[in-house]
Length: 358
Image (cartoon, rainbow, N blue to C red; front, top):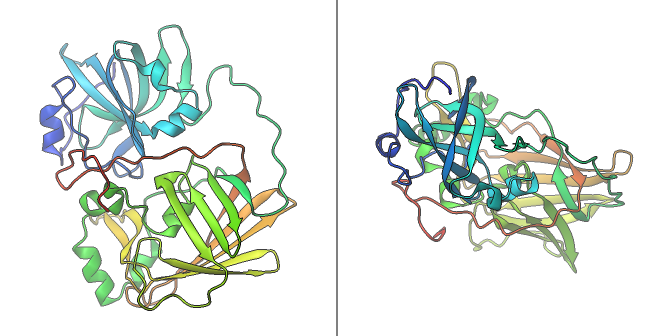
C-alpha cells in the first residue's frame, strides 16, 4: 500500500467526497495532459475491490475501495485512457465489474491524495494489463498493412511528445494575446471539458485513436475517432465563405500538389492550441489563438517507410508577433475500426451533463 500524503488540494469538492463510496464527482482535469495533474516521481499501488468503473471518453475512471496508511477504508479514484483505448489493449468493461479485486499501479495525483493515474491493472489470477498495450503473454504483432497512398485508416505512430511544458510561442504574444492568456484558466476553460475537439493540431496529435481518410467526389473526408471529428476538405473551392460560421475546426479547402494534399483552413473561432503550458515559476497557462488563425497542412504518403506524413503550419498575426514553427507527425497503417467516441462533457462546476451543448 502506498503512503498517501496530504497534498495541496485545488478541488475541495473532490477531496470532500473522496471518502464516500460511489459519490466522487469527476475532477476538473478530465481530458488533459499528464504532468500538470499527476506526479510520476510518486508511484502508487492500490489494492482492493472495484466499486465503480466509469466507461468514459476521453478518460475512464476506476473506483477502488482500499485501506489507507491509517487503516481506514477509502475510495480511490484512478484515471486512465478512454474506454475505447483500454478495450483495444485488452482491458474490457466485463473484467472491471463491481466487486472484482484489482491492484492498480500508477502515479499520485498532485492535488488530491485519493486520486491517481493508473498504468497497470493486476487481477487475482495473476494477469497484468498495461493501459498502453504491453501486457503479459501478448501475441506477436501482425504483419504491417501495406498502403500506396494517403487513403485508408491510420494510427499515430509512437513518439516522444510532451503534452505540456514550455511553449516558445508564449514569448511572442502580442498585447492582445497576453490579455487573452491572462484571463484564461486552463483547468476550467479548456473546450475539451465541453467535448469540443479544439483545433486541428490537437486533433492530429490525439494518441491511441484511429484516423480514416476517404474521398467523396470533390471532397476529402477526414474522420478521427477522437471526439468523433469529421472534417470536410473542399477540393472545388478556392476561398473560405466570408459569411460562413466560425468553429473550432474552421473551414478547409484543399488541392493536390503531385501526391501531396495541401489543406488551407480559415474561419476558425478563437480557441486553444495547447491545453497546458508550464513555465518555471509561473502559473500554468494555455496557448491560445484568435479567430484570425490560419493553418496549412500537408499530407502525403511515403512508400519507403509505409507511413502517412503530416506537417502543420499556423499563422495568427493577432495573438503572435511571428509565425509558428511547423510541427509534424507520422501515422502507421492500421486495420482498426473507428468506434463511436461519445465524449461525456462536464459543466462549469465539474459535474456530469448528458449532452455536449457545444
